[in-house]
Image 1 (tube, helix red, strand yellow):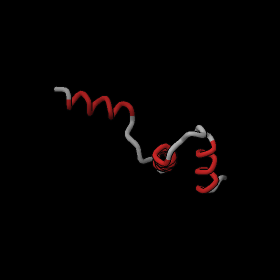
Image 2: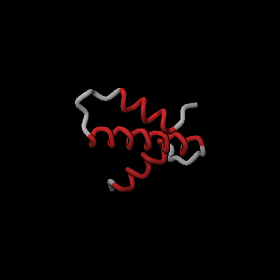
Image 3: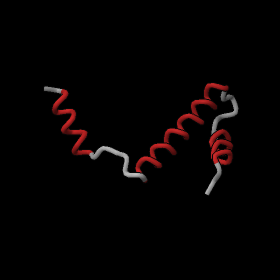
Image 4: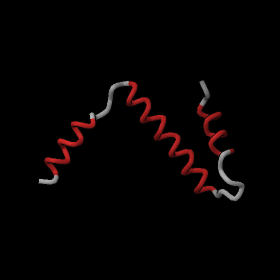
Length: 61
C-alpha cells in the first residue's frame, strides 16, 4: 500500500511540466477526496441509489 506522500508524488508526476501551484493543489485535493470517499464506502457510510432517487422525488415536488 502506498503512503500518502507516495500517492502525492505519483499524482504530481502525472501533471504536465507547465503545471502551476494551483494545478498541483487541485490534484492533491482531488486525490484526498477520492481516498476519503473510498474510506466512507468501506465503512458503509453512503446513500443508496434508490434513496437518492427518493430524495430527488421529494425535492422536485
